[in-house]
Image (cartoon, rainbow, N blue to C red; front, side):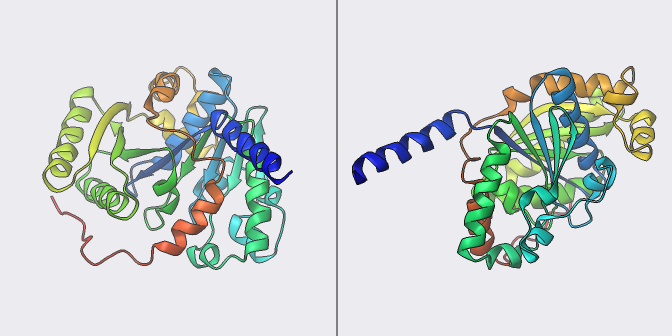
Length: 292
């Protein structure tokens, strides 16, 4: 009997991996517009590609929640503190799109007791079971979620400070989590030539100092309609579909499945997030950002 149960459990795990959604972690400089891109791409995937998508706001300032949620939403931190159901941190944005307040202090995740961790893992698995894509908006100071996602999207804007910050994040993700492949998305650029120039600069620095592979995936132009959409707490895809930003986002959303290099991380992602948080303390002193 034990053997039959073990085989059944093994088959269930295999089925979860085969039907696992793809997870993409977005990281970037403070002024790169990462949160805006997560909101825009998630909306385009749900609205135009008819995909089932969850947006995860892992920032302590909850920028994505403040922009997209229409009512008060708890965070994972509060869910853990007060032992609430995970649904308290989840809200639907449309038929195919949900938003999750996923920030929790690293210490809280690291010290999570087994029973609560097991319950939350089950609720997380139920939440994502029928989804196609998980998009994580990840803060620079807490990269564990990006370290365990299927793929990392690095958002770079044409700015020297942003280049420095992005390089530091790539270095940490490579050094602490073994990430070696990074998709690079240029944002807020004026021309394709400018986007290519800044990608070349990042590639040159990373190629000289790190053993990583950077892949160009596209760019989003500087556009006042994107700023207007942010102020109005909407997206260009929804409200300004004829804008340059919306056109670029639509093209990127159609190609996003091709960015994936691996899959299968989602079924036990919550448990691995807790484990990764326990294993990684403060960043080592040798991870000083490169200053171009």
